[in-house]
Image (cartoon, rainbow, N blue to C red):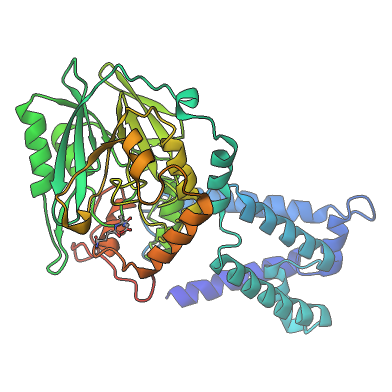
Length: 452
Ligand SMILES: N[C@@H](CCC(=O)N[C@@H](CS)C(=O)NCC(=O)O)C(=O)O
């Protein structure tokens, strides 16, 4: 049935193109030739088509799903970015030169006009070339958008952000032994207000069983101390553990926040996991998308956000009073730094992000998101900006950007993927929600073969 409806729709579309003259290059060229022998009649065709489609879409979207398909296949990206603009210009040039755009060119194929016969193969060649460029990252917007602001703003953090060392939040850490993640409850000292940072949902990946022991420990801490959760913060979309933020939110409230560039991560991994169009890539699964420099309050404390791309495009560091939550940028001085080889990661960006964090006042407390106990030492998660600048094995003062990039890229080549990357990203791009159940009512995760 879907094939039959596609055939009928194609037929209607083709008849429309031929009747209206859209498949006649001479007519199209005259339409585009505004300052010459302009023939505006095609404008009526386009306005008519847009009006019919507008009304048709309103009627169709009243339905939960299409009649003969599972979901509506609609574009989800709303970014006006460089690839979109360059693509539109290239398309316009091609259209203006040939008088053909793809639909009419295909419709005109049966006429076997030499123009069409040359246009279609070259169009396909152009599409293949554009895909190859995309695969090599040449037209990917993530890198283009995230490098510039950091390059132009190497002011110190104290100049740029509202640092307030007088506020000393009470920080309680929760270590997850399965993923070496440290989650935090950060309490405002003069009240019961708190934020929860980077919580963990437990998964036994072998059996696909989800549990909430780690999250329940944080919830117990909140309840025992009578705390009020203002925020649930994700420093980024983690690749090594699943977030428990929605579960905790359902028990104790709070607003869920992440960096605004989560949309890039959703786009990248939406493709990796071939998520359907029902998966929104606009960050709307979160309550707040933070920009660099944004502030938010936890009781009487004002926290601020630093956008720190490199490990992922959406990484952020959160500064609350004299406490800095480093996310996946720095590790403890003897642990070095986070890796930069995930899709959208970039060692040079990571170095610049870290250097900005290290312009915070030397005495600030730094709290890690991970510690792997290098050289067999006990797990630790707290240090200071001064300690990192003096001793961090990857980025202490004196190590150059090029040295760092060479080291990081060489090390990243030796690292295997985190054991939970596949379930983590599928859940974390959904803000910690599990994928929707399928028609049988069961939830599934996908494993992309050779996709990571
Ligand atoms: N063996 C760990 C690997 C964890 C991992 O790759 N951690 C990331 C942070 S999500 C990292 O940056 N590692 C840096 C490094 O090992 O140099 C796992 O499987 O979970």
